[in-house]
Image (cartoon, rainbow, N blue to C red):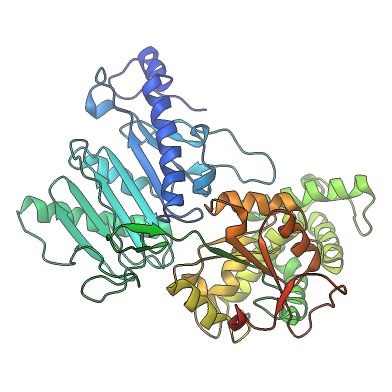
Length: 482
């Protein structure tokens, strides 16, 4: 935990302010808002962030501390201890402790630059940044404003300056960091418009009038409202139904994974490690592999070989890593250390157009249909979340991620363990597990999900393994049957 007094505040008073009741309450408020917004369908997965000033009348406004949510943490899992506390100048005064293996070290939100920009203009009290696959939203709330408004528009860029708030929407197909950089310009432009007294005329912000996700002028409005529809009283009713999809043998032929992805990773692991060896990402991959191999050696796992220390030389370390990875791939092991490295290797393949994601022809139409119905669709695969995003983001049918609300991998748990599905049901914001439909081709996964209370359907696709007789599950051969 780093500490440094804000400008004009003594070290003693700064520490007291940092540990004060108001800062603790603000930490709790940010965590609670993240969970509430997730439940309302306004944010999904790790996208978006929230920051709030810790208002204390005894501290001058320019020196009040700022609480920011971390980057890469699922909204519904945030706790007060996950929060960062910053000075008014942007210096980090308090950071969360590192998470245990296999979680990555927390970092301050990538939205921090745009948040600080908002605090510099009109003394913002809170800022919310929600970015998903269809839309992006940044909302600044002034301390004296009693009104809280949320809206989002798909695939568009617009700036609205009105009263105490400045609302900015933009296309979210780029990373959060790049968005933040672009928003610097948009915020500056918004400030200039406000200072010049220029009124806004577009876009329209009238109420939604029907239940099919359309605004009064016929435009699709999917962003923040995508998880619900309007009832006859024009009140939002949130849809709690979710579909959780396996990949291999369900959305994608098993042959693509076994005959394309696995061989590509195996054939390129040495090249990838050699080229990227000194990068922070690869060093993190190696650290995970070391921990996994050490455990494998203690358990007597066949094919495991010791990894020498770094001072043994780069070539020796890489040679042992390659031997272990090849053994893991041959055994088709569903472990985070292997899946994370494979995802990074596949990323290079997709980037260089050497790989293209493959899905069954009925999948895109089904995803689009479910999305239009307001049903949230998630992916749960043993492949890393990055690998999942690469597969669905680069298909012959285009980028299918716009229909998906989130991705789960083995970090949340083994796919054949009931507790994994209980964790997912807590994460997707349903009232009970039975509101989730899980589609998989693996009997053991179906059993585990059913034990957790999920509704389960088994996918029968070409090349899939045989099922036990009298398995007791519904089966489908195409998503059109759902």
